[in-house]
Structure formats: C-alpha cells, structure tokens
Length: 102
Image (cartoon, rainbow, N blue to C red; front, side):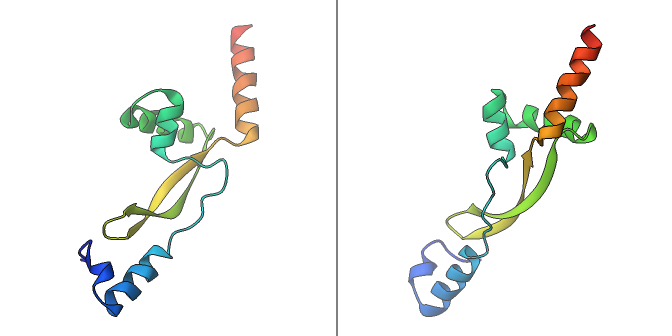
C-alpha cells in the first residue's frame, strides 16, 4: 500500500498516485450516495440503507456504481453505489397513495 506521504517522495509514487486519482468518475447531477440520502431523509446511514433496499425492491429508485476516491491519504478508488429517484417513480408513488386513501 502507498504511504500517505509517498506521493511526494519519488517519481514512481507520484505517477502511481496520479494514475489512481484519475480513475474517479464524475457523478451526474441527481445521483446521491447513501450518506447524502441519509442527510436528505434526516436519518442515519444504516436506516437510509434499509429504506433504499425497500425502494429498490419496489423499483422506485435506481442504483448504479461510480468509481470514487474513498481514502484521500492513499488515493484509494472504489466503486460506490449511487441512487436516484426517476420521474416516473415519484408519480407512481403519488398515484398509489392517492388510490389507497380513497
């Protein structure tokens, strides 16, 4: 593993650090990770993951993976799940609630 200070120590380490840092993908607008979803819902991350699992089972939320840096000290890049609510799912959910309330 790279030591957090090794990115400045020699050309090999600088090259490796640069290559790892450039593997990140840009996350498009509208996609949120589980921490961001938790913040929007006002719950902790564990509870948000439970909600997201239920929403995915009901096909009301989309999930995909983007490569993101998860540790700045080592330049560690991993696939991280991101979620979004498609337009049709919010309309479907509102229609379901309206039918159930009548």
